[in-house]
Length: 124
Image (tube, rainbow, N blue to C red):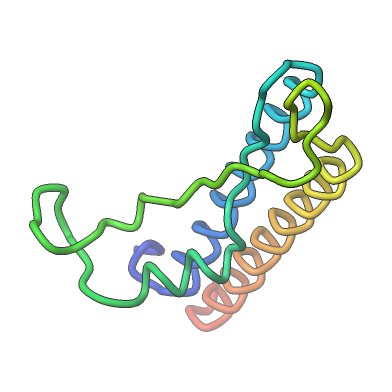
């Protein structure tokens, strides 16, 4: 029932995006000393949401022209190359990890708030 409401779907997508960003950030930190490693990052949530809402949407995996919203463009960071070819900045990864945590907390707050409103409207 809750998956059909756009606000819940958006909150779940925001939490999922924050989790993916946290995973990429921890992977980048783990490879901070690996020679030639390129830091990976996700685009901002607003960009991914805008892209998924534009154009056709697929309701099944085998639809030809639509997208099911699962594809995200992962980019490699090319700036600030270390002498060993690594592009991981620990300071930037710490900021990214904190931002992902805030985004996840925001998504959970939106979900809880709208769930409270829905329960109040149903009289429970």
